[in-house]
Amino acid sequence: MNVVDPQRRIAEDGCMIESPYKQKILILDFGSQYTQLIARRIREAQVYCEIHPFSLDMEAIRTFSPKGIIQPQSEKMFRYSLDPNDPQANVLKEVERDYAPQAVVGIHPCDAKAMELVRINFDTQGYKDPFWLRRYEATTFVGLACKHPCPTCFCSTTGSGPFHEQGLHVLLVDLGDTFLIKALNEKGDAFIESCGISEQASASDIEKASSLKKQAEGEIKSMVPTDKLREKSLNALFDADFWDSVAFSCINCGTCTYLCPTCWCFDIQDETIDTDGLRIRNWDACMFSLFTLHGSGHNPREHKVQRVRQRFMHKLKYYVDKYDNGVACVGCGRCVQFCPVNIDIRKVFRLMNDFPQVG
View 1 (cartoon, rainbow, N blue to C red):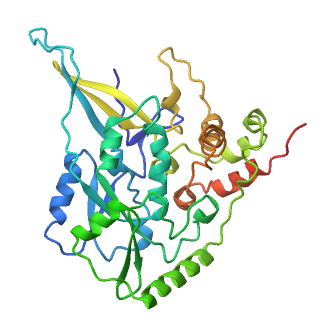
View 2 (cartoon, rainbow, N blue to C red; view 1 turned 135 degrees about the vertical axis):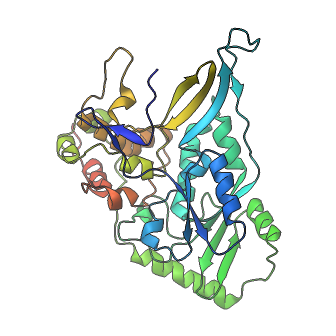
View 3 (cartoon, helix red, strand yellow; view 1 turned 90 degrees about the vertical axis):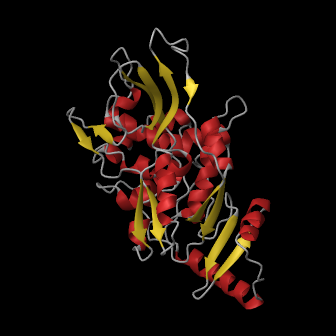
């Protein structure tokens, strides 16, 4: 079996090239003696991470997405032996993991909501992914309210917001010389108690936080329409005449999917050295030509326009029709900001939402 590095991609000409945005976890160093320990624990979970000073520019911080903490980019699932003399040969054995309680501090509210959207895929009535769920349930999400949303952010029109609380256990609001800390549930209460925080916020602090929320919401200038997506004909959108134009400049680099907090696609591969093997789950992306390549050699999404259409149809139509709880996008704006050829999902929102109904 050929094993493809999930951090690389196959270009249209068949050449293997590096993806410009490898997934990584950011650790900000405030001088704590635990910084290196945290990094080591994350790397032991097969997740790449980097340590940066706390003064790192916010634009640089935005290139980091926290989804790899719950869904590692490359994850060892099972090990096995092919040794004919081994009585346990050909038996899959789960790789041991540490599911100790952990906290993600400073997560964007939109990223926390994205975790809940992704959970729909990994926690269904018929099937439950134990690896994803154990990490998710062991994690306390401590959000940091966005006082100054970036220009590409449109979270307020996708069911989220700069001070959104869904998916969080604790919300922090930077008041300048102090933080307002709000527990949102029992898990949040337990986290605050474990930190030894007991001082109650003053009325002026609460009023200041409310004022900052209104100010932040007012700074969001990008809006996307979603009100007509569900009523649109699936087949009509699939055959719409705007897909060639949307996909024209795409180079299938996968930046949008790897940065997107609501993309959950993966591939499972077996890697064997001599008689020892590992079954590994790697991130995959619908923007890659190998994603739908069959063993027979047939590829139902051979051309890039088909792959671009799949990405947007999944987020703005298939998901909408199947779950009826909004779009599979939280409006973080990362794909808009970092797309090397300036494909803008906000434009696609409008094209799909306003597409003329036939009949």
